[in-house]
Amino acid sequence: MNVRIIACVFVLFVCLGSACTQATAPGVDAAPDLRALHPGIAPVWLPLVRRLADEGIGGPDVDAYFLALGGEITQEPMGRKVREIYRARFMRPPPVPGAPPSRKRVYPGVVTEDNARRCRDFLAANPQYFARAQQLHGIPPEILVSLLFVETRLGTAIGGGNNALHTLASMAVSKKPEQIPAWLAQLPEDHAQRLDWIEDLMQKRSEWAYKEVKALVAYVRKYRLDMAAIPGSYYGAIGYGQFMPTNIEPYGVDGNGDGVVDLFNMADAIASVANYLAKHGWKPGLNREARHKVLRTYNHVDIYPNTILALADLVKKPARPPQAKKGKKAPQWP
Image (cartoon, rainbow, N blue to C red; front, side, top):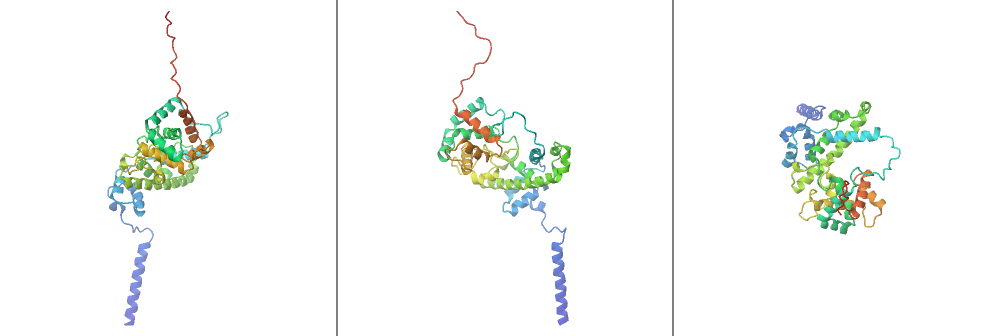
């Protein structure tokens, strides 16, 4: 009897050991088939869908967002970012003699009387939104309208046909240099010696993009918006104020009281931008240097706040009378 018991225990031990070995053996995929769990979704998006589900953001609606993307990623967002950072790191041109310092440069073609007139007209058409922002946060209307002009030309340029989810999801799944060949071809030949650096950069930007994907999906689900109808910038910023999705929850404001933070609604967009600036240090009575510092949190290059402040100065000035066109003098009649 004792021998039988010992034998049974031994067999049971061996079987348990074998089962444990099979469950943890390298190369054995114990996870369920993602394609079966999310039918129709292109394989390239499945890791994103699974990760979102594991973090509590999953369901038929989320599957539908990715199903609508089709099966092609776009190289552009990751490729553009790699090219941008690579050039800044390894190809920075020498300073041009006589060029203005960075604190004085502005975006070409923005600070003009014609654009200032457009901003004044926009203020006149939407006075209540800007008045409320000034009342709540002390932000002058000319500052807000100039920021909206720089970002989206007052809502007339909001994405260039790019779908925000497709842009961000493409960036999130782009982790290897071989995924952006068209953009690597635009770099000098010696970039081949820096492929490890490029891959490390892509891994970091991929993780950044995933967080933006997660925030965008949560935003669309919260307000039951149409994901396919949300355009984005080169890097997935949305709305008239070009918020990244991770900025919507902490800074977005329902400016018109309809219960939805809609960044493509001008009341909400203006209130949200004002709230963002206020939470980054804007207070009534800031001097120009302090204003520059707050505006720079919106876009981390000096040329950005330089341009907004310069355009705001022009908007605040009285409009210039239109100049008569040059030509032949009218005949003088006696």
